[in-house]
Length: 320
Ligand SMILES: Nc1nc(=O)c2c([nH]1)NC[C@@H]1CN(c3ccc(C(=O)N[C@@H](CCC(=O)O)C(=O)O)cc3)C=[N+]21
Image 1 (cartoon, rainbow, N blue to C red):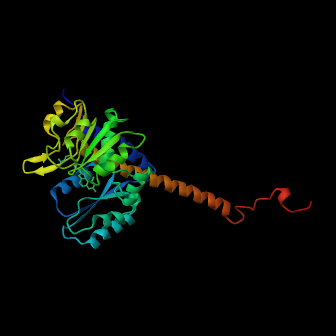
Image 2 (cartoon, rainbow, N blue to C red):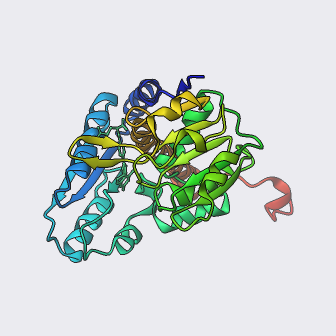
Image 3 (cartoon, protein in one colour):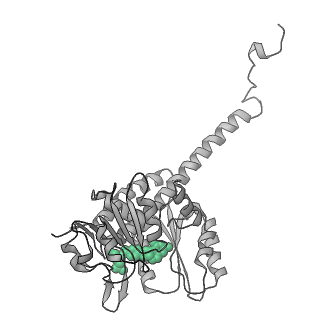
């Protein structure tokens, strides 16, 4: 058996085409989405990832706002950039590229962001909303995984999903998405302390490998026909390595490879979050404008343009 490729590049391109139309519609109503990125330090991976982000933005017509700080930036300097983007009306959404260099408090930075501009869905208020089932921007990688599985009709209802990795961007939030009633999967969250990892993986209909451990998932561990998504990226001299051994393609029913699987979907979902935030802001603004117009109409003092309405006879107090 050779797995069907869950082609993230092709799927992300289709999503970008859909978003391009929505950005054009926003522009017609005078609302231009703008994505900000905050990059601290010079990690080559982070740099490449942020550059990709700006290329994607240019392609769909989203303005991009780039902020870079040196690796020795202070907490106050990073927070000043956050304050600036919170206040900038041209920036409708932004991300702070993680991980931050040692010594910086990422949680304090995330907490300081305007949750309405959180394009990553990683602000504590938005993660809380995800737990509560309240609408919120969703973390990009988990959202990209769900979208990829959906577009390839991989069955999720009642499916056993094994997630390997407990990071904040993937492993922790993905269980919250997959166990919603709309997806209805059952999720086991495994990590480096899990006993009998092979057994857990072998039970699964869907495997999400996000541990950052090259070749961790071998063909013998995978249930024939299962969907396997490689989310791990390890940078080596020889290139990028995923968490899934290449021979898994002979056993799996579906495979999201690295590269070309979940990574491009993550980027597409970031764009989706930015467009959705701009649509929500535009809707709130036009609702606010309509409300203000109504308030003016009902509260304007009587004058030559607005004569006081004549009360109906039974309320006028006039005995005639
Ligand atoms: N605030 C924040 N939000 C993130 O979403 C976030 C982050 N920080 N820090 C780092 C991780 C990693 N990440 C990737 C996204 C896309 C690819 C991607 O497009 N990968 C391509 C190729 C990768 C390459 O060639 O370098 C692929 O898999 O085909 C990779 C990695 C987002 N992250």
